[in-house]
Each structure stands twice: as structure tokens, then as C-alpha cells.
Image 1 (tube, rainbow, N blue to C red):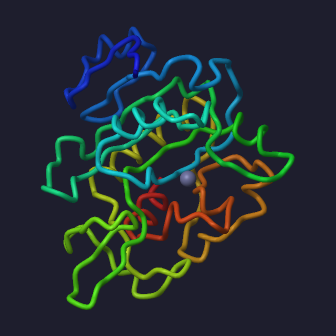
Image 2 (cartoon, rainbow, N blue to C red):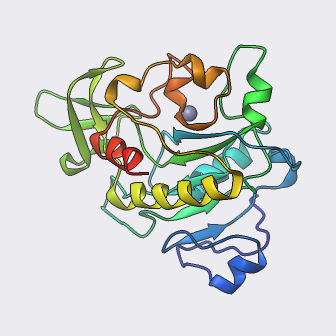
Image 3 (cartoon, rainbow, N blue to C red):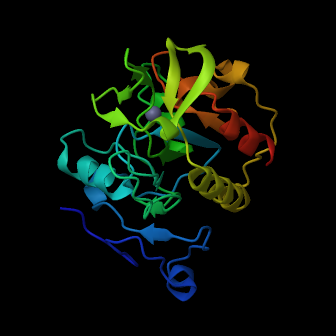
Length: 246
Ligand SMILES: [Zn+2]
């Protein structure tokens, strides 16, 4: 079972600024929920942070469902501090769109990179993971419909065509505007709190494994820049615009 600490809400209702201030958190988006995993699902120890790393949940629009999954699995302390909700692919529900869920305090850590190198633990400790609720690549069937990797239909208006194949796929479950705006505000807050520079010029060509990421260079990264076999995140033009605007 998920246990909630400090302020929490099971529905996407924004908590008050006072409650957030008590919890030591600055409100960064129209919706922000703190709903912490139990202590045995992350390492509740303070760590210095150098990197902010984006991921996909590879799941639905609801961040709380992903966190519930982390709590129910037997993978141990695997997860990220933040998740940002999206729009339902089933019925277009947008209650969670751009809603940030804090699953554990960002100064603590859990495994989220899964590297097979000696640096794996140090890099996980010194980074803050941010999951975008997103299915990743989608495939186009002959009738023009799009399907996620779990074989669920994805509405056309939620699909972005890169115009080329990235890691073997041309069509992707789109990031939403509210998701990227929430991500932008969260990055600004975390940059200030942990003194991590956001200044970087991004292009689609940067979405390859980066030696600097693996060496622990401070800044914003995506999981796909640490691992060749990962699809999170992909070079959506709106993501590039957001990162270049920081
Ligand atoms: Zn990832």
C-alpha cells in the first residue's frame, strides 16, 4: 500500500501554499501532490545532487498509478522523486495533465538509471529523476491507427510524427503542453535549490549516449543519454524548445 506523508491527496486537487511551505516545498505548478512512498522504497538519506534526469513512465497518464506499481513490485528501491501526469489515451481525461507528484524528497535517492558500470550507484545518488507519464513510441497500423507498446490505441491527436526514425521509431506518444510547462517550472525550482545549471543548447542530435552524462557532468539529461537501449526521452520539438528556453 502507498502511504502518504506530509500533504497528500488521492485526487488531483492542488494542496495549499501553506501546506507546501510546511513541507519545505515551493509550489511550482497549478497542481502539486506530495505522496511519499514508504521508506523501504527509496533511500531516505541526504545526497548532494548534480544531475536532473528525464524519463518516461512507459505507462498511463496517472502518476499515482505508476507510484502504486513501484510500491507493489519486488524491485526494491527503484523510482524517481517526481512524476508529471498527462492526458488519458482512453478517454481524453486531463485531470492529471501537468500535475506533479513527489514520490520521495528530491534530496534522497532511488535507483533509476540501471547502468551496468561501476559508476551506477554514484550517478543514481547524485541525480534527481523526473518521469513524464508517457508510453514512448507508438506503431502505426495499416488503417492509420496508432498503438502503444502495450497494444492499446493512442488517439491521433496524441501522436507526434518526428518525420524520421529515432531509435527505430518515427511515431511517439506526444508530451503535452501542460506536462512540459510543469517540467519547466520544476527544473527552475530544482536548479535553484540544488545549484544545477540548466543552460545548455539542445538539438535532436544530442539524444544519443553522452560521455558527459556518464561522467556525472552537472545539468539536465535524459535517460536515453545514459543508455542506448532506452526510449526516454525522445527529441520532441516542444521538449527541445522548453529545454532551450531555460
Ligand atoms: Zn528511464
